[in-house]
Image 1: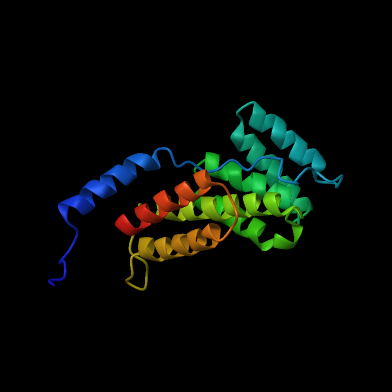
Image 2: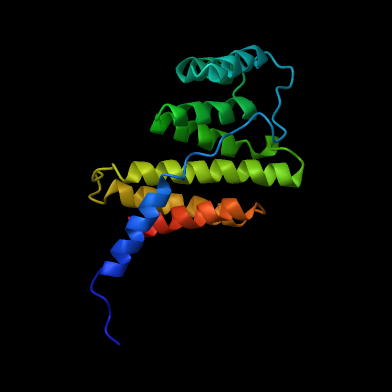
Length: 186
C-alpha cells in the first residue's frame, strides 16, 4: 500500500463542505438558566444591568457591567459565563477565552442537577474550542517557530474530547463532530 503524500481532491471537497457548515456553528448561548440565576449577592445589580443592556443589543455596555460584577465577586459563575458570551458577541477573542477559562475553573459552582451541569459544561468547552479554532485560522507563527494556530487547534481538540464525554443531546454531538473535522482539515 502506498502512503498518501498529502490532501486529495476528495479531502479538499470535504474541507470546503465543512467550512460551509461552520457558518451554522456559532457560539452556543450562555443563558441565565442552567441553575445560574443570580443569588442575592452584591454583584446582582451589575448582572441585572447587563441583562437589560444585552436585551437592547448593547453588548459593549453589557460586557462593561459584567466586568464590574466579576470585579465585585470573582467567584460568580453566572457573571463569568455571561461575560464570556458578551465578549464572543463582540469578537474579543482573548477576553472571551479568559472568561471561559475562569468559568471552567469554577466547576464547584456548577449546578447540582446532572443534566444542567453537563449542558453548561458542554457549552463552556464547545465555545472555548470554537474560539480557539477560529483564532487559529488567523494566527501567525509563534516565537518558538511553531505555528500558533497548531497549538490552538490542539487545545481545541482537547476541549472537544472532554465535551464528547458529557451526556448531552445529539445536536450538540453533531456540532462537536463538525468542529473536530474542521480542526483536522485546517
